[in-house]
Length: 152
Image: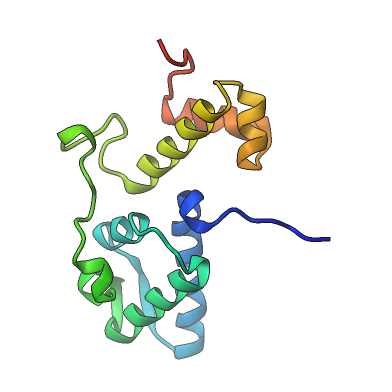
């Protein structure tokens, strides 16, 4: 039985959870007390395209872990390829979107809207496309305040 996972760039909402697990594991192995990622560091990780998938995320966090001995991982601890990019792109030239500046919320909103558009706003098909249960999709749509009227 083979399980097919979509690439990490298609499931950005997993990045904070994966990063947390990696940091917890590295703290245990290396005897450190790194608390997690600060907001801007997380934003930079969320805006990366991950051609190397989860292993690339793990390598970037390990790199930051070497430079950060305690507290939170900051952008300056991340590899150079991430520090050269702006933290949060401003879609449409606005500094804030309807989801605010939270990169996780922005990524989840983009992902759900894209799936809904691809499936012609059929929620059942969108849930199947995303590989989640339709009730999970409904809860996320409600939590993120996504308009289900579709294209006007």
